Image (cartoon, rainbow, N blue to C red; front, side, top):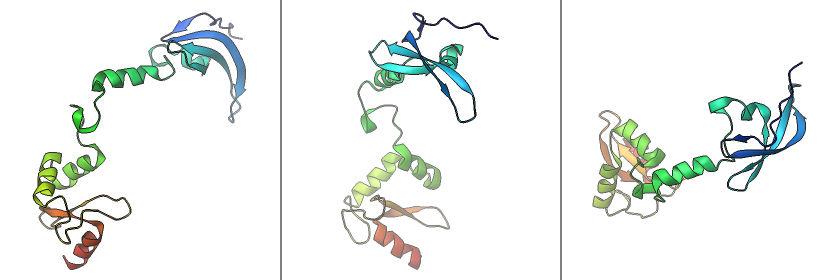
Length: 158
């Protein structure tokens, strides 16, 4: 039988253990000890003993450490204002599929008048309400930016 852990009053990162919580039994049959903890930011959390005592990989806060790191990294800037921002999922996909950077895509869209290259609508439409990048399937060269309706039509004719 293992020695009981006396964790009340101990600090793990930003968490202070204040009392033992009722043990929980998991569906697999394992029973784990849990402790009531209070974070330096004032948030209370119930944490499993294994997550507290895992050394460098254990729970260190209620989640506020990650929020603070993100705020410091971004300095309150989001999206295009953040120097670490790379354009999001759409930009990553365009970079991978068409070899086009966000600035190039935006320049092309500006030259089109911020509308569909075929029907000139200003709303993209479609299920995701996102603009489609029209490209030649043989060469991969980007031809323009289309609304969902024109993109479906172009797929039939090209």
